[in-house]
Length: 240
Ligand code: F6R
Image (cartoon, rainbow, N blue to C red):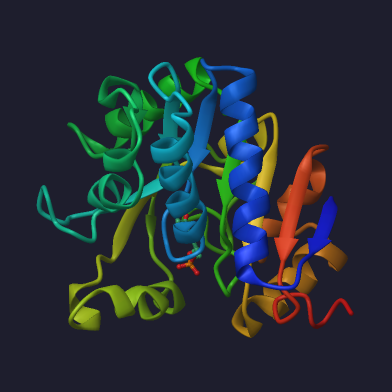
């Protein structure tokens, strides 16, 4: 793992946005693996700004998102589909036919298989990740197996509590989600994980220095040969 400890979130956002811009410029047909949550917001804002100013071309880019809630009505502002439109897709010239976010169409089993088939076809050149305070990546909660593919999950109570800030009340936070599995994430050619703030410090410390274990799913990233971890001092504080 290549660890980069930078001075501020702004510096991290700039560095990671530049990696994505370089990727798209080097290969206009790139497959970008994308995440939601607070972590990528700064990166997406910079990609939008760059597109406006420098016209970086996303027309032939394919995107695959990590995960989506189950049970929110279509168009719900906190669905990850709406999140992605609001924060990135509406601000770049991505072709919506090449945008992929897992969703439930038919049975859970059929939906997971369809997304796995898609991921076999579109392997991310670069996958952006955040990390949960409990060490989840995507919505792969503690206990998820290394060889897991796209699956539906019961969200950990900690994750629902962490995400309650986006909803009016904890009861509105969905209990279930559909997510790429650990194996799908590890299939990406390159992985870039961002973590900022003291609430992530424990998970980051275990992810980097601890054993590879299902109880901290992010530790499976140790098995990948091309991972960049971008941290601020707070998230890195147990490593310093
Ligand atoms: C989002 C995702 C999650 C988040 C994680 C951190 O698509 O898969 O793993 O990256 O929950 O969330 P934030 O960034 O809100 O701290």
